[in-house]
Amino acid sequence: MSARPQLGIIAALKREIQPLIRSRKFERATAAGSNFFRSSTAVVVCCGTGCGAARHTTNVLVETFCPEVLISIGFAGALDARMKAPAVFVPEYVVSEQSGAEFRSAFGYGRLVTAAAVANVDKKRELAARFNAQAVDMEAAAVAEVAQQQGLKFVAVKVISDDLASDMSFVGQFITPKRFRTAAFLSYVAVRPRLWPAVNELRTNSSRASIALREILELIIEKPEKLDYLLASVAEPNAVARTR
Image (cartoon, rainbow, N blue to C red; front, top):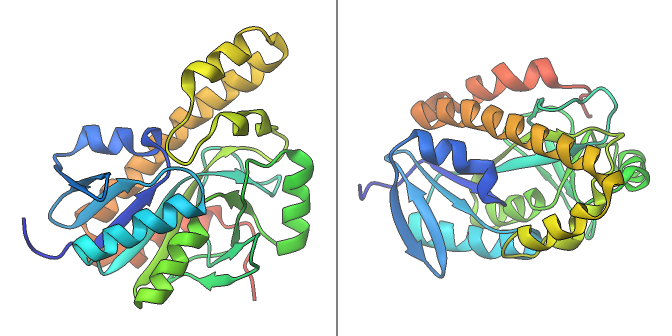
């Protein structure tokens, strides 16, 4: 399997790609401390959380496998009340909250903003107003930046895991660039019953979002030459705003 893969697929967390990895046969490879999962058409990797981790791992992926297209995938928070979990969102633009840099993807509708931390409800509303964005994540802008620097095609495929009214900001303290601190998180919420409904919502929506991601990614990996057509089939029905 030495041929150049067409797709480089970057996720932040293992749970975002576990259903995909379990459903297909991938070769496993290690480079610069990252575990990559490769098929004849795609290489998939978990980069960890945040732009720093995403930028580093995406550069390693490009240098090691030389894909033609970079795809930032994963969960995102809704910034529009009409976006409900597990809607698939394929943005036309990705903008960095920190730098203000904006990147245009090869296909999509609307705008995704990449933030530095998990946003509470007030922060979501601020980001929506400031950037005219429909969803927020923590990695896509870094992947888009690498794609621009390397002259590669870029798209983002995000699935809504928390609605506009859902406040999941308490989760942020357990997220590190390398992993999610599951044991500490469970100990924290165990003695805070007020958080249990939010945790149940997060668990349910994350599971649904992972399945939705697997379904679209399986189609893309199977027929990468029809990438734009396949993205159009999910982006158009779920677009809530077109920009510019």
